[in-house]
Image 1: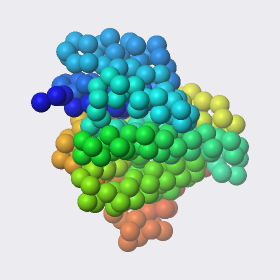
Image 2: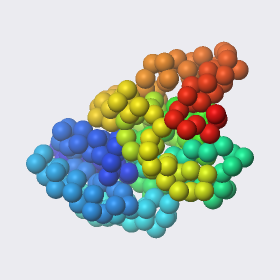
Image 3: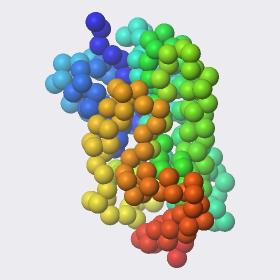
Length: 269
């Protein structure tokens, strides 16, 4: 039997990079995509020790033609697609009253439209393989996080999009999953956009106390293997918060506000 072919966007760092190594350990052939070609090349070199085939494709998921090319090159090399993990993402931190509208558009272009573009062109191949279409969202796709209007909106949008695609394909055999990590140790907060679109730089949270990207990747891969429709990670900030919001929405909103206000240099202070 031929090896599974897995495409991972946003694979140059964080959860995406960890997913690449997790699937390499599982013996899958990989297609890794990101904007930083040098980092992709370095990761590709590291992955060769797993005796798998790796294709790295410089991809800006906000550009539809880049996503189309990513899928075309994958099929050209491997002839199939078994798993597409839409992981590329960017965050932001600023009050809506202060943020430039362009910042919200940039976040939506990466997180939502990047997922839509890649999914659209991969769909025929995923249907053929009865494979898995995955979107890495966030707890921000279930709870409105203050000072992250664009980020939460984009993650809510991805969840709504993929939930609908799942319903449309109840009889086709396609597996569709949304994975919502809690706060994960990665560089997403360092690269988060501020009110004027500049990178935040320093993370406002204690990265050492968060779930590691490697642990998140293992849990996502296992959930895909078990063809789960949804994965919510961490108990208190994740599963419990989402559950309680259904019954005590105003209370959870107050807790969320107070929790986010404790961040270093929070706009809520």
